[in-house]
Image (cartoon, rainbow, N blue to C red; front, side):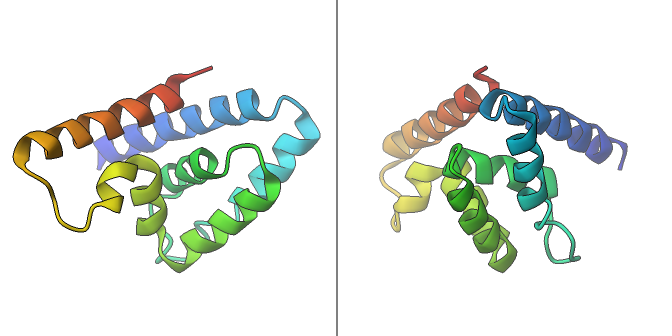
Length: 119
């Protein structure tokens, strides 16, 4: 359980950093926080901070897109995570040969980490 708390704290920190970078205007940043806050209010809406980061990655700085992806997350957060964190793998219905699969995994991970830590 302690590890979960550390992960959650780290994700909150990353989320705040992304919000500050993507929305330098305080008013807009608060508005985005409110939109993202619509996800995670119910027990079935899991991994709030991780999903909120995924929403930002997918939507970019467009408020309407943030609202749209937040709605999708409320329906099924796993889709949002797949689209944001595993975009290549999410598009493949049949996994390719092991070498191609490994390259897709590495490319997805690299893309997400680069986005996450880009400031």
